[in-house]
Length: 428
Image 1: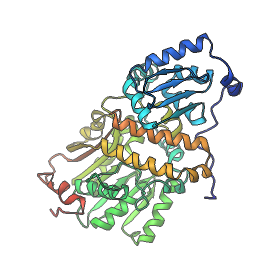
Image 2 (image 1 turned 90 degrees about the vertical axis):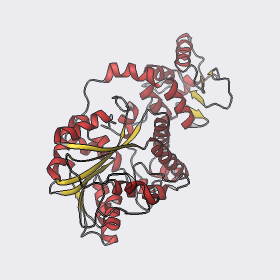
Image 3 (image 1 turned 180 degrees about the vertical axis):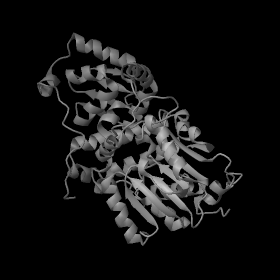
Image 4 (image 1 turned 120 degrees about the horizontal axis):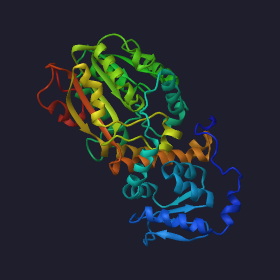
């Protein structure tokens, strides 16, 4: 891998005086010992161990449990002050290290400490839910998605470049098979028929749009504000001979035009912001035919809360996972009926495990592109996301809707779940 990239995470995190090495050799002071004990108390019952720079250990007596090494006094103080942000900062630059299973460690933290930390942070930080305008939305998407297609190709499924939850219809499915099953799952849920038109809001690298056209005989207009993804998708459409049936438009979902039989959004709502949900609903209402139906696929939560502050700062600026109640703000004001809700939380946990395994295998290539800090940050992001879904901190909602009174829909779910996601089965 000869291509290199600048680190999008920003400058390395260090104390102002740069005295990390000196602190590492220093004996813990009275304040350090007090803070260390408080940190241990906050994690009481968790199957993990904490270690200071002088070798002192608190926590589980199980020597096989993950060990968190805190390398200096400044790191300890920052960790106690704001753990949800500082753990990610300190782990990324190596001032906090983990021996053992990183996913297991984060699961233990989420189960035993996340609720207390989150409640304190919400009192300090929940002022406004975001409603990014078009300029801010472009900046947020550029930060995450325009860091290089070659980076994502190292660890996503190579056939469809799907960066959303896969669907493991059978436990033994590979990532590639499960992503294909996910695309069939989406198409079946909105009952696509040959000759119909689809608007896709937030199309990634174009894999789902091309899949719908190729396998279900529809025409697609797909909107995305990531320049690199749109360039890639257009080239892919030309190579597949589908450029006349799939139009990739570099524009915001708010500017979607024309009419459609189906409206699909997979993995975009997390970037929309609750303040813009009614606007999205008006766009759907404007575009959807009277018999139309649609699907929204989004990371979510069981109760309203901001995303982890470190992920918002370093990985996904502006991201927000909605509750189901919040998602209905898209539909109800616009006369749209919810037809079906499915939670694919454990499917996303498995998807992320597969991504994490691929990422770890590609670690050398990623390090060549960026640096060690980037590798550690993305490893933490993927591992933390696995833990978020296995512990229920995060959910994955698929919500199917249609216009109120729209009756051109199957009466059972047989059309969705029969034949193990092998292809289209419903013909009206």
